[in-house]
Image 1 (cartoon, rainbow, N blue to C red):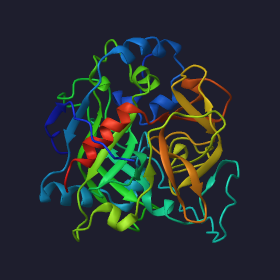
Image 2: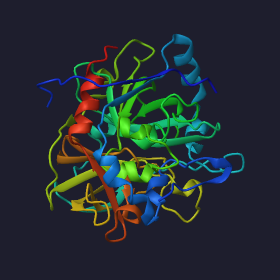
Image 3: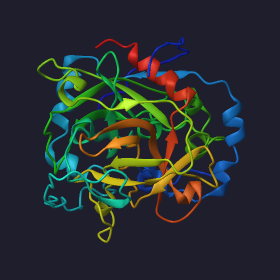
Length: 365
């Protein structure tokens, strides 16, 4: 595992015209998506203080040399991708491929869906993918991420907790390593290739002292958006030139607004009785509702959990084309945000997310 690259903190300018305690796991490793499992009410207590602090952008360098990019591309082999997120990968069986047949018929718009393999193709199957990384202790994990429309055609959105934990931005263990985006991931393959991460950014609220502020508190305060700027592919193309992109908007949520969400949940790696193993992209859809215990988070009925973090919540989704507008990214379930069982909550995109997006758009690739 390579040494963590340098980190910088910056407060960007405005760009006009752009559309309780954390769960502790074996070996001290914070399982990606730990926010999804925290039921500690005390984690929400620091929210007011978090929200009151001045916010800026904290940026961090990724793979900036050809040697780093080549090493990361070689690191993510088919079996390593299949097992990303296993608590004990040394003894975890490689999951079997998901052979759910594709269905060329478009899903009727506005159809509620509590969770199923997405079989209807379209642009979403290219622009959404699995985001892989390595924790500071050397074990691998994964999230979900989406290519969004941007001038540099290299901008991807995910959840901040997929990129780092709470702590000093210069500390060795704060940020993830070996970040790698695989658009359209399916059964251990890279159908559209893989892209290493050139740079990444989160809200500066994540720079808090972990002794006094938890990841859950920062996320519940609405700061769980992360932005990535990707390197070009091996043949020199930018990611959006390969995948296309989804629109992005920074709007206020509306109760009852119909939302489609996508992700790569992987609970079956650690629980044989679970439904998903991260092999295929999963879809949920339904009317949005506010989190009773975390009112800045909004969610829909959905059975996704670990691995879905960072996945897009889209409004105006057209199942015929597979396009919509990203207005949030998956953060947690009802165990943190409250409400009825089987609800997947998003951090909705507001002013802080807009600053991160402007930061990413300003990075040429």
